[in-house]
Image (cartoon, rainbow, N blue to C red):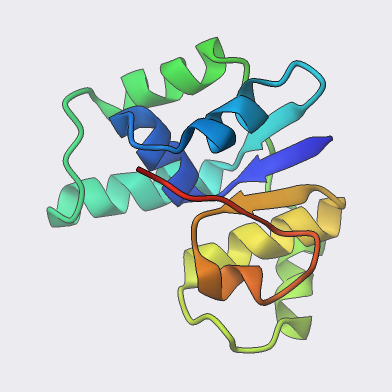
Length: 129
């Protein structure tokens, strides 16, 4: 299965607060796990605004994702255009862009956000903590 991680998945993973079932899903060798450069932008903005505090730099955070086997997934114009068809269930622009990216690429989206899970039956909702 191909999975695109929501930013919250990446943050909880880095902080060590992602649930075991979620970690098992990400570590399953049968799955190809992606992260979006949009998530890196979101992390940087949250870091700079004081809403997020990592002990490591964002550069180290990205290195750890890649060392863990995650693959970056480029954001394409076709993904941006999917946004037009999304209803306004969720207002966070980063979450909407990530979901559009997953839907465009036909990749399962994994998140801890219950509101995002309302968009599509292919979204995988997991717990943290």
